[in-house]
Length: 395
Image (cartoon, rainbow, N blue to C red; front, side, top):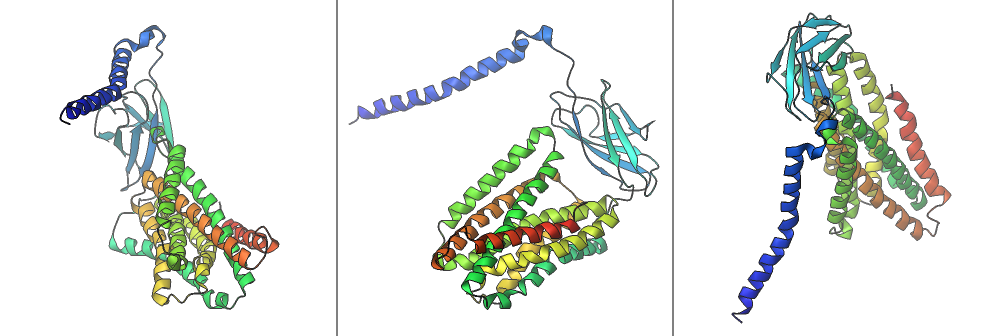
């Protein structure tokens, strides 16, 4: 017995040695490539420079701040800045060269004009030019109690209020027949499919604003798939009697993460000085989101969850619009926006799966074909409601 222990130890050591050997060899190959350039030094071209200009803010009159990320493969320097085709002095924080994947904030003393457009151009030490535009010059909102409360009210109008109004159809829905209720559930699937597509497109829009090393599109797809997997794994452990209310909560969660993106768009519009667009978005999203309340309460028509549960569902679905408006107005971050929307996409896809299963079960109980006119009609009406009310928020 004692002789088996050294043999097992030797076997484990040999196993670890085989696992580490490829890593050691890879390290040797990488060291050779770094030291020799792979023998291709004679074919080396000029350095590649790539800059991602992030948010441009106007913290006070006569000052422009530009957030810059070095998205290229090597260190770079920005020695000159132009505003409206004229060179201007500036300071950088941190100063000096920008390392790969590093960032800096450029502060430019420039007498910008309220309500006018301005163009900013950054010149690298190799002569590359990177441009961005300020569409409407206006003071960037600063965090204070008054504006914080006003932005919060905007999110409330856009998110919580329309969802609550949509929930008021619940007493009417409880009186519907089984076939009519299945129509409403199919309509819910249509709403969710439209929201999934919209959330994907919104996530792609924010991902496009990220530096290339974030790999925006693959990141959105992978985060969404991971979210679906986690939610399905959690869902497999739930009890059957908990499903209707739990399903409504998951619908509300997916819708809430989608509404976060709507709040970001509204807050960012006001932060960029596009007040008319922000007001337009408020009106449009308020009308657009009233249908979401129907989808949230649809699984509960055979239950009486109580007013407290309805209030929590409305807050879960609409509350993120408030958070999104605050973030978009005061501290917009495209990375967090992309991540949250990708998670929201995964949550919506998982809910589509569960509501779809519920539709299939109810259709079977009614003795009707799953791909029948009732289900198809409900799905089509759901998509059409979201599509045509979305006319109010597209520009």
